[in-house]
Length: 289
Image 1 (cartoon, rainbow, N blue to C red):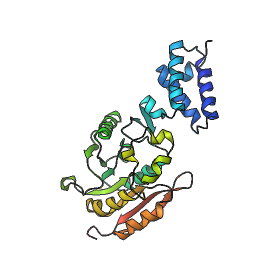
Image 2: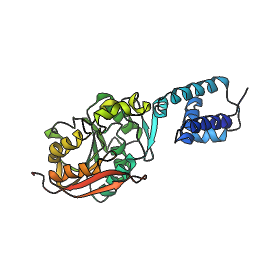
Image 3: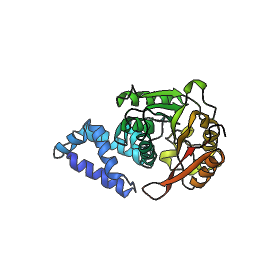
Image 4: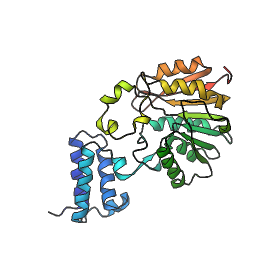
């Protein structure tokens, strides 16, 4: 039986809602758009048109894969973060709304500087660093990432967002000391792996089976990267510069103590929209601590 685009979208949205998917409206729309090759505007324009059978079948195949756990961002190969369109694949974590808090905090700070150099460490898709570059014009950003697959996505996203003059991807290991030729930064932002290794098995299947474990595993207590970055990378931060971390649930106080122990002061904790402490940042008081 023929079905209109609007009815197909509404059927899928209801199916997702019944399955407990929080972002049912967004995800239903994105899958119908992707399967039909339409933009959001075109989907709205063509809402009353009938869907060709092949497109309906393709859409329902994507829906079945999503209900089995495969994230929409990986199915369609892209996602939006802080207003920026990003290429996404299984080499990188899917950008989440919680991480926009990290980007917003860093952007507000970088806007107060002139010609600042920013390092996005553990960059993944490059979402945070690209948002900083886009909304704090005049700064220069290095996307630091160890995984070559993630670096390819970074390069694609730099080009896609027209930021090649401001942003440079660079292969680095956040657990090792920084290369000397990387230079000094006014600000470091970092959304590191922070899931305790023992918690990986209990993650939702959409995360555990699809997102890269390299970007999730934070060591026995989830804090390995915070210790390493504070200990090793503060030498790449100018005295008076700021370090911004995203943190997992229940980790903010521990990260604050790690930062304080190696010479950071004026440390603040910022909650996300759900009231969960999500960002910890501080100022480097002594670069040779």
